[in-house]
Image (cartoon, rainbow over the protein chains, first blue to last red):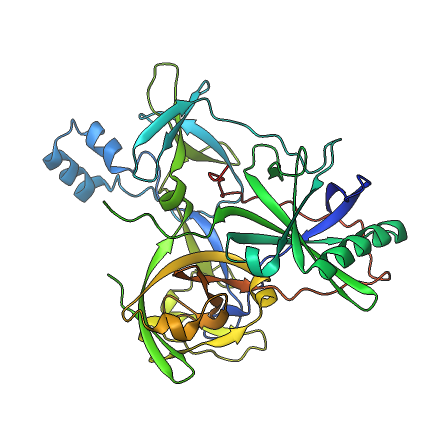
Length: 235
Length: 198
């Protein structure tokens, strides 16, 4: 279970489990006998069977390439094509398809017109949801009717207790937010900083929503990386 | 330009063109360039687990196989629901005469895990006064003919109208008795989002 270290408005914190949501497939594919089928990854081609390799092997002469394809089938590796492959490792290769053991990375930043604005070392943000410093309530409440169309809440996580103590902690949070009919901005630092779910991951704004029904609660962490705003007009 | 969407709302019918809204168009984007020690550009490739084959981009494919491992062509496939009932394709919303809009609550919209956003441009802007502001309307959306539809909401921000598409999560309230088990949940591996607004 993934956990997040969060603090309430009094600065009391606890490590809380949270659940992601993925879309469950309601349809599936079957064959003509109504038996289930599955998708498998296969080798479709190899470096040696690529056009650029065949061209190089034949002195960049298209006529020789045509002859080779007709007489020797270099474009199909009969041993490998169609072979199922399981897990693979990712490597970097150069233009000659040789493995590269030492690399330099540069991050190029483009504006929304596609113009290069900066070049920098790629930034690597450490995860901050389970560090010593908890994700805090910022104290900034946003009424639901005011905030729903300001940001796009791309994903949701449900926070849930794992003991009687954390039940009280979370129920209390949910009740306050339910009564205020508002979402609370939460984050790193003083509560307004971005949250990063995993090392090297992207930063998000987080908003906590609470709902209460009798003695049950629902705490949803909405995360956003996008404001809802119109596209820039073309000049 | 794509076809216009045709909506039906109370006694009104109206049409709108849509344009996708994404981070790249709003904030720009960044890309990481990888070079070797000689300054030559490098690209990513896959290596098979036995180390025998290096497979650059485009060298792998996906095939559908049956329980015996034999290839099954797309034309031989049938689509069924969770109870095994054969399904028919639902036409694209662009081929639908009138997409029925139903007024929804803000909390319904907040339950949506978002996949995509489109900005609307109405062919006749007078519909804005009938739709009103700070209202949320729900409908079903499938860009192409498909076997299932996404949940979609039409909302506005000031004078601009958007449709937000995704899948609505059915959350369950929890009481003291429903505490989380310390089960191991697989970490999410996809993290494709960026954050340019900060």
